[in-house]
Amino acid sequence: MTETQASATVDTQPADMLTADLGLIFRCIPHRYPFLLVDKVHSIVPGKSAVGVKNVTFNEPHFQGHFPDVPIMPGVTIVEAMAQTSAVLVSLTLDLVDKNPLVYFMNIDGCKFRRKVVPGDVMEMHVTVKRGGGKIWKFLGQAMVEGQIAAEAEFTAMIDLRQG
Image 1 (cartoon, rainbow, N blue to C red):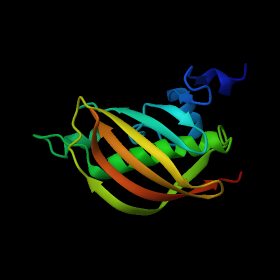
Image 2 (tube, rainbow, N blue to C red):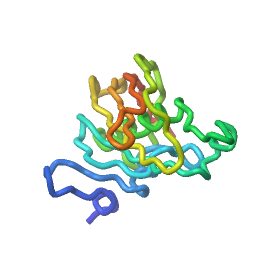
Image 3 (cartoon, one colour):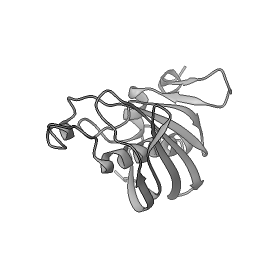
Image 4 (cartoon, helix red, strand yellow):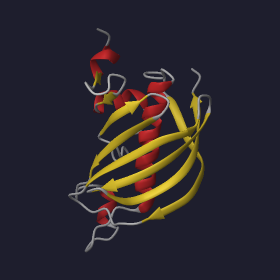
């Protein structure tokens, strides 16, 4: 069994879904603490969709200033968490594990915030591919907490494979 196979486990229902633990996420995207905003990705259907999980805790640095007496996760970090989930999906879809891909936002459309995300929440980032396959990918993302939409957006990103 290869290292990639050991870190990506196949769910039993349906058979084509994968799960990425933190070790595999590290191998898919370059983000690290304090800017890694996804703890796990499950229900991965390569080229189609995935669900990221973020366990929101009070000790994250943005809560010290946004807002100290009423900590709320900044909207931009919610959108970034959706993008990081998408980057893991693309990395697994294009077999980019251990190839150090960078992913850059190109566009964010229709971004709406519907519910506060606060310490103690478990945020799920549901991402679906609208268009992709090469360097440019477009996604629909929804961040959910307790079955409620916290944020949603369409976003486009470019995959850049660093040389050397």
